[in-house]
Amino acid sequence: MHVKTLEMLAAQGGLAGKRVLIRSDLNVPRDEAGNITNETRLVASVPAIRLALDAGACVMVMSHLGRPTEGVVNPEDSLAGVAVRMSELVGVPMGLSKNYLTQAPELKPGQAVMLENCRCNKGEKKNNEELAKAYAALCDVYVNDAFGTAHRAQASTEGVARFAPEVCAGPLMAAEIDALTKAVAEAKHPLTAIVGGSKVSTKLTILNNLAQKVDRLIVGGGIANTFLMAAGYKVGKSLAEPELVEECKKVLATLEEKGAKLPLPVDVVVAKEFSATAEHRTCAIEEVADDEMILDVGPKTAAMLADIVRESGTVVWNGPVGVFEMEPYSHGTEALAAAIAEATDKGAFSIAGGGDTISAVSVFGIRDRVSYISTGGGAFLEFLEGKVLPAVAVLEERA
Image 1: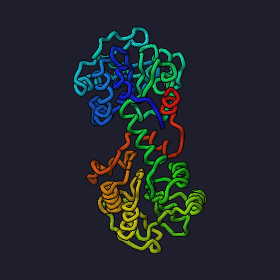
Image 2: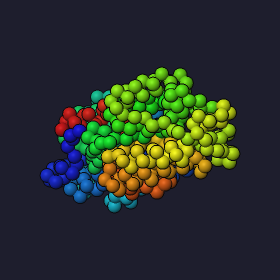
Image 3: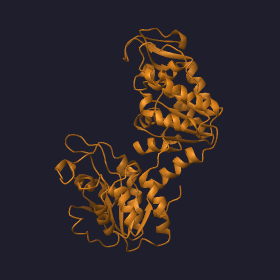
Image 4: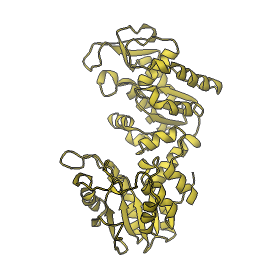
């Protein structure tokens, strides 16, 4: 993927005195009192804003927050509180502009302003052309730094990029594009993908797409249980989707055609109840009883999968292999996490994405030993599905 970047423009002196509109992802979680409970997205958005300010630009920051009703700005929808915190993080006062569509903010070089929640504007979600042109009229340079929204063709993510005089990717967007390209399109082999989760149905497109690219496909959770059924094993009362067994067989056939493999568990940790305190045991995969459910891979399987990961040139991780939030069933995911860290230490490129995966990265203390942690969520998944991300595609077109 080849896109123009904010760093390029700054290095060329192309931002001094320019009106720069940065689409950030400041959609942060908040408690009932409206207090921000996780600042990860705010902190990740600072470099783009700081870069533009330091280059002498007049900076406008745009983002969505929550799921407001278009045409209405309720107090809980406002970015006012976010603007206050971003002022502190960026180091310059950042007021809130509410009427920017009718009265463009007046800024001097080195000044910044937050634009009120773009999802409150009529036509934002449907990528209304008039709204996109109104956004474009605010700026000389449009910067998309919101990879988390890259899979949505909306006025502030895709439409505006068609009409702004100059467009580029911010550092966060550029890093995501680079990391995902390294992980899939330009992967160093052997390429291993780990896909966990409760249902095959939610990850079927990802599995089909990855099966055509990877050397090893590791599956976990309810997804693994359905593949076990496809291989003829009984999984007791484990979470599985019998209706998708044939789809799993197609994935296995695709892998077999290209000489790739999907290693199935040889032993598992089972219990009769979904509980951290339930009596549990480790058994061979052939010994799962009808009244038991599989909640993690066993030690032999964990060791086998860890060996595969350690030998990889690239590792893409999306989803745990067990119920890692419960201690008795965390060891499989912990072993994989350790193996990913070791592979990275030896020069492999590793990328982790998705809420549960990022939680596991933190729980097992390997954040600094993973090459890249994606902030993308839905965009990360759609990239793995092989889908075109509209907001990235338009940046490529304009480049």
